[in-house]
View 1 (tube, rainbow, N blue to C red):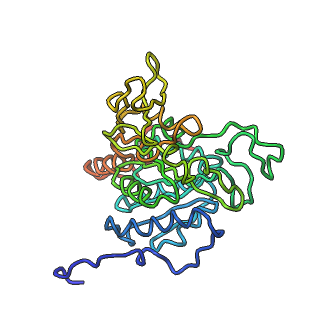
View 2 (cartoon, rainbow, N blue to C red):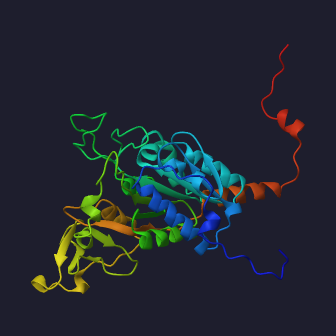
Amino acid sequence: MSPSEPAKKLTRKDFTSDQDVRWCPGCGDYAILSTMQRTLPEVGADPAKTVFVSGIGCSSRFPYYMNTYGFHSIHGRAPAFATGLKLTNPELDVWVITGDGDGLSIGGNHLMHMLRRNVDVQMILFNNRIYGLTKGQYSPTSLVGLRSPSTPLGSVDMPVTPALLALGAGARFVARSVDTLAKHLGPVFIEAREHRGTSFIEVLQNCPVFHDGAWSHVEHKDQASSTMLMLEHGKPMLFGGDKGLRLRPNSLELEIVTLGEDGITEADVLVHDETSRPMAFLLAGLEPPNFPIALGVILRDPAPSYDSSVVAQVEAAKLKSVGDIDALLRAGHTWTVE
């Protein structure tokens, strides 16, 4: 293409590989994949500079289906591979694909350190509250009482809340969406990509074979308006038509109020501030039946990314005089073996 020719406008087809998509019929992974393939051309992403890195699990087949570079790595270690990629070539647009098992169990340590370091990658955690690839064992996000092949009498483990874990690890961007809400999920992907540093996105996702309806208490069309709190920076936190959130008087706890009752108006409802970490912790832990689940950007708190700091440090070192490797090896504490 000559300099005078306009750049080709890419479409979903340009980000779709020639591989047959092999997930179970009805799996939420299809919807997430479709949204990603539609979103990347919208933001002008370049397939030649885009990389998807995954670990092990149903979600980790994702790189095969994207017509970009990809790396299907080992169980739980996708964050480590992604960190190496970003440090080696900071120009790459790196996405980490993981699940509640791969990312929060064997990969929990790697996930935590990527978040605290603030490596400039997007991490999408598919949360279906079950191990799907290995046939339905309970996962770190499974609820107490879940009966599965590994917990036939019901799980007694307290579940992990991914967004809370991310916040506790020092994440600077935390968001949440739902697999089938394409009009919501796509913009969340875009905002995550625009953020410099680690963007953590939890996607509530259904496994129709081993844990069908894991999020039915959130997604059911007849009750979604009252179980989903769509967050928007600078806007009051309203849901269900006439419900809102506010801090309980003389407390640091949230409570639900109804507009029009006891003189409550929209002015009494909390306004979402995505830069507030304390508020993010309160919102990340909400879930029906007592509260709606918070969707959208829960926290956005920019800070220099790990990779940019490392690159700056290396460049600063290069400005010094060229070293002598032989002198370096013989410097400091040395001894002679006879």
